[in-house]
Image (tube, rainbow, N blue to C red):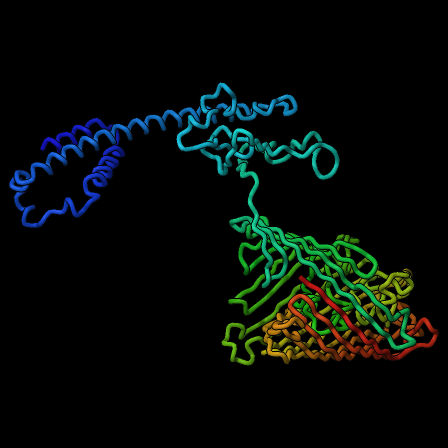
Length: 608
């Protein structure tokens, strides 16, 4: 009973329930750590008085243990008081530091030790030994606010380490002069989280491509992708226009992309095309719901399935079909709403864009409206269902035009551009022109183009087809606008016979990547392909003075037979024979008009 009295006296001396809890824990650890010594038979617990009388020595030991417990509690209370004093000192020092930083100062005149008074000789905490179980003092990375409880991040500074995140020096570039006082860390007060430098984790995204760097929470990221295409072309001689056999680089691209919080994505990219370098894409995408996203900037417009849905590195043939090559929406500046519905069974996009294809400026206040829809009704069926990846839909491009003509010349395998056939650029030597608009012709009047498409993917099989039609309006300097009907169609197929299967056009990761090293022997994946493509413009293109019928034709047909070799996921080689047929003879540099031409084409592509 005397031991119990000591426990009660100890509890009365404690000033918080925390001490009571600690006392109970220490009591249990001290007295009942050895279960064998203190465990009592059930029969003896029935009479505590008899048990105490028979075990006097144990009772004396119990009382002594309670005294030890009392001393330990006293020691804990003293340590708690010491910790409280240290905490008060730290709080005072932080308040002092906050007040100093919030006041303007001249960094050049302020000595280093003044930034953190924690390390002044007069500071009682300057000696790490005076801190309990710590050799460092924790301070925020950037300027502190007066409300220390709102600090989000901190890092340790030893006596010899000081990191002030000193702003960039003055002078040119994208930074303001005077040490860039406009940086968030210096200029913003309320709302600035002062998170400082965030750690990044690097990785390569093998599934979605590209080297990436992200923060630990994946809220912010930056990625890089690249594309290089190298062509070897051999035209039959003489060839139409100035087309010449040789080696070309149709595309070299770098993509820089990422996210500024998960729902806000961005991309800016650059492309070298033959002998010119330009901005490719520059946009921001808001993705708070996959069913409705908003994209602003310059990017691929939603007109024609080949253009909008199939990446250039995923094509069956080296380039797209005749209609898509010459009249696709191309990249433009605009605003677009897009998304997927009904568990990915419906894809849609609709937007407003500047009117010139592949342009970088608006030539007027007019806009083109484009819309795209693609149905995949069986997309979520079991893979054994043959029509699971059947797709069909359509797209439209409508507007009123008044700008330089693009394309200035219709070609067999080059994206629309304002380059005339008289230009000395590499594009005129790398591709076949079959219709060139006369000098002074502009796009002027209504545009109404549409396409119906279908696609089917099953195992290693790809089947693509589309029917395109509509009108484009052109005018000469002295004439009224002429509406020219346009019609086109194509059918294309490919089959991967090395065992790989696909659900959409994509780069193939071979089951056995190409490798000649011992133990790794493999030859990659192979995909034979075939395509027929046709494009016809109404003969009014000649009768209305828009082009010269003695030099050009209003109809072109292409037959492509090829083989795609996927060495690995990153390297693809196209082998293609392209036979071009023209409705009437086409001018050539040799002076002998040609009604057909053969191109033997090898394209080596690297994409990562």
